[in-house]
Length: 435
Image (tube, rainbow, N blue to C red; front, side):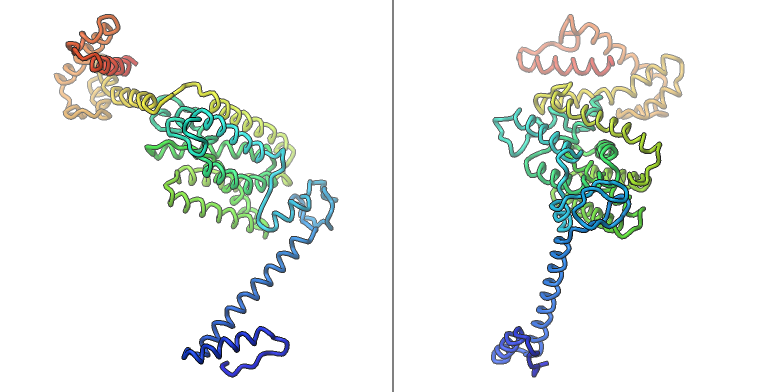
């Protein structure tokens, strides 16, 4: 190899020979240097050949019908075999280089408009803090999913959280992902089912995040987008065709990238995984539009209407929240009230059972409590009697509290601020025990 002569017409051999000669003059191993240069040149040639082939593919106007698979000669806007819509030349070229643009009236575009409208509304509500990032209290105010507030009965937050985003970068990344994944799902399953899948997997993603119990505000469309990724991956695996496997592999890459990125930035991967698993299950059991029977075609509008109603309700509740939590302190107060009610419930239930003459049921109820010495079997009848008498006394004082004030519990302090805080605390306590 050290004495290799350039091939006829191979002008590139000259620079390899010159580089090898320089390496020999510098005391380097000329054989090793030539071998590395030849390997690098081979890789560059392979890359140029690949780009040339891709450019030729982009220039070709022929395409396969997404429904029946027939190859069209190019230029047609509808398949001559089944009448399905075919992609335009620009859209086809973009898709072949790895991009996709949704149609203006596609579900993906309409969802993007809704997400942008929600972001404009929420960012505009905190104009003093700018448009690039939203504060936590703003996200809570407009429907961010925070487990304590969901515990307090605000279940609508599981849906509104889908359309909220924490900042411009978060928004752009999700809209970009939706623009790439959404059109593929619409092509395979139709617009109606795509919207239904988006909302269903988004809600299940929010539910997965809630079930994990993260002590954080969860927001974003990424759970629903991961659901669409799972739908496309599940269908591609089930189809088993070359096109199906290609879609499956690309969707799995999106899923892996999303999960890894989520790990790096501390995102809600419970929602990501929940959405993907739910979507994959739907993709495995759902048929594409071109193989739908009559009853499935009749079902599609119903699914689309259900998805539209869910999306419209979520957007409406986000733009006009039914419960306004103007500050993080106020939201925390609601959450603390819900937690206090949860702690009081075992003791209220135990006393109800004890007063009804069922001491064993009362002891069983106490197993959910948190007070030491009242752990089920350890609770003696005297202790149960004392506990229930104490609860009855508390309820009687709470009954008098609105009229008589803080004096029914303790001597009111002279400091007005402290008195106000104590009154708020006892008011919350009484609300918890009276529920």
